[in-house]
Length: 265
Image 1 (tube, rainbow, N blue to C red):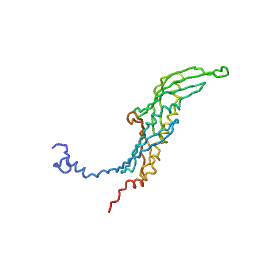
Image 2: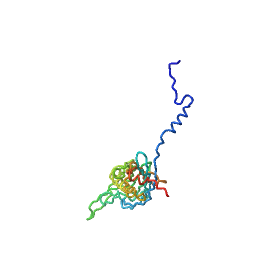
Image 3: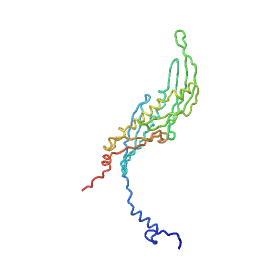
Image 4: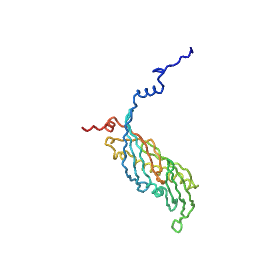
């Protein structure tokens, strides 16, 4: 006989492996299934002011309530339509950067555009910078043009989740001007002014009080934490922002939300 011992399958040699695997699968405990409840966030129109302009944002979203062995939780996906902000960005930028000093800087930002670009937003600003000086002449200050230049700059706006809402980081991607206008466009003109105000306006759209509208009363204490935000193209170049997050459900909330209705007699 051979020294190697032949292994025997349980059930005898006449039971094929496939049959044994099927029996094992049937005898194994069934995996628990999660209970899922989808909810829609009622569409809302939110008015904000930025740079002297009244801007209307449109918020929509959905909640998914999940009850599983590990506990109950919720997931939220909300988006805000920024088309009205796009349309008014030229006036907002002019309010931020235009100057008209009789004996100093005169800045005319003639063009501005905000559009979606992948998961970011691209901002273009173009205009003219002039430096004027004044000399007394016959008792009056006569203004003289000392320097003038046309130019433009492009920026990338990158949203991110922040502890108190949504923040926007601004990065200069191109400057088509040098000297005073180049420095102005790249740093002094917009800088943190625009990104901070855009972030504040968008963050208000995602405040918990707004998200609680049209939700079950059991979610009155909803405090979602957004951990992913991105700009998006809502179609035909219309800018939007999508935020995704999670929130915990207490045992009491879960019991009320996932409780099956009692059968009718």
